[in-house]
Amino acid sequence: MPQLFPFRRTALLLASSVTVALGSCASGTTDVADTETPNSAIATDLVVMTTILPITQFTNAVVGDRAEVISLIPTSVSPHDFQASPADVQALANADVLVKNGLEMEAFLDDLIASAENPALVIIDSSEGVAVLSNEAVEGHSAGKAHDHAEGETHDPAEGEAHDHAEGEAHDHAEAGHHHHGEFNPHIWLDPKRAIQQVENIRDGMIAVDPEGEEIYTANAAAFIAELEALDAEITEQLAPFAGQTFVAFHDFAPYFAESYGLAAEFLVDVPTVSPAPEDVKRVMDTVQASNLKTILTEPSAGEDAFGAIAKDLGVQVGVFNPLEVGGPESVQPDYYLTTMRQNAANLASAFETSTQSWLPLWQPQPVAMVPQTVGLRF
Image: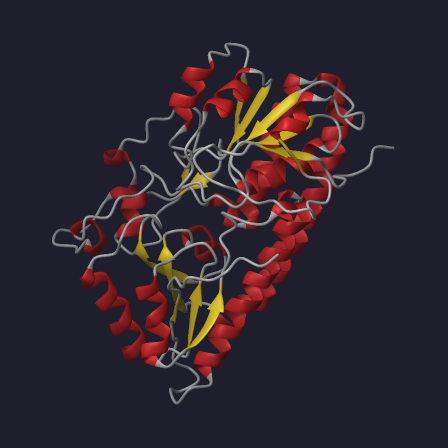
């Protein structure tokens, strides 16, 4: 009987453009140098490379010890900051499979794949078939209509209702010169329902590459999907009392989570590497003051000092919502996703409860703002 998504040895490629200190407590995580020696615990010689942290977690859940999983982006490096090195190109040239989030989350991949010159490389796009939200709709502060993302689909904006806007509709983010990932918001992993579809895509892709491992991939995926279903049910129950309320994130990672649980999401910037315009800062501060917000949620990897000061200036509490874009060495494991998402839901519920206990009537929906603050990563 195969062991279901066991604690894996995931190799981390360390980009030459950054210094990454993994420390002595890596607990089974190896760096790229260790991949030169075969790992006796791995059942096949398949090499599977992954991109962002959630994709590494999902791939580890499906693959187990059937293949070696190599994380292209170090866990402590945001995908928005990642720069590929020659070592990354060589590693991809030697890989059998590349698993990606898709939806232009990994903007660096096209050039990296071309440089690797690996015609045998099989690419698994975990976003295939997942209902997506257009950035145009998100920037218009509308949940929009979700579109199923199929391979090769052109997504003509003229054809989708989510792309239609009434005459004279304001586009504050676009006017402020914001830059998003692409046509569709890529942060699908933050909705456990969509994460299930990503896991299914990874499972099916691995079975196509390695048919002999079908039983293992199917069993591992089923076990993790059951965990995701339980997680989704827990979050649904936990956030149900706050349906219709709004929270404001620093960057645009939240629309899928918000849509899934009947909330509304606003954001300050499209990607965390973009500096917000003064009018954006003012808009967030005005929202906090006008709505009598009592809690501001930061994200661990984002932020500039000026936004950490917002909470202090306005005298509100500070919480955290982790979009799972960075983490410690242990964060490559599937359980880390489950634990972090539970903590996110608990933090958000606590933030809503704090606002509800303010002087405003209990029946009045109140938004919760999420702005960045420079914090130290502790794992």
